[in-house]
Image 1: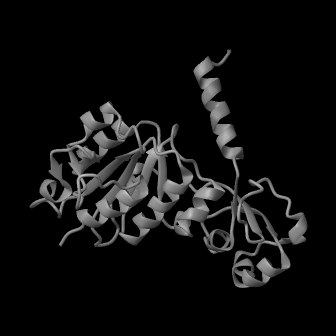
Image 2 (image 1 turned 90 degrees about the horizontal axis):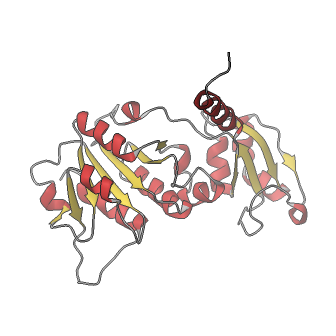
Length: 259
């Protein structure tokens, strides 16, 4: 019996995802990936200088490095990438589902960052770094129209990609609804909102809080706005202040923490 088209497409997508690999580059990103036992490592290409600097991490990982001449550093990454003589081919990390990541297993405040079509890997990498610093449980994007796990993202995250959960889900509005059912207060960041983060969280800082940020320029989509519990802004010292999305995420996370 012939399989339905949707079944065939789903199986093909699953096989494609299973075969997907990522090239990480740069000493910091490669070192942290080598030291991460959850990361499946496939191929390490290094210069002698980089190998010396990564010696401890290479030994801990158990992977056999491929030595190369700095002038013949040939791996499938952008030639303009600042690789520092180290590149590591890996499988993408799998962080589980939203219900697993939205509940803290320690006593830190439950905070999440949701990204609505933020596609720039440098912005997402910087957000992952801030999320780790401020104790967020996860950063959540969409499966399509969001930055995938890449070497550029990992390098900007400065190691946070190996430790900070980054989930990419099919539908952001469905994720928001699921979080609301779990008791989360979901706040959408909007520069023209009537209330600030402080005002929205007055007397509610002990609640689990999810902060939703949109891409620079278009901001949050209307459906995302409609699904959030409230829209909030970051107060600026002047009328013309603005922040890029990664800086806004850091400020919003800090502003949302209990005091």
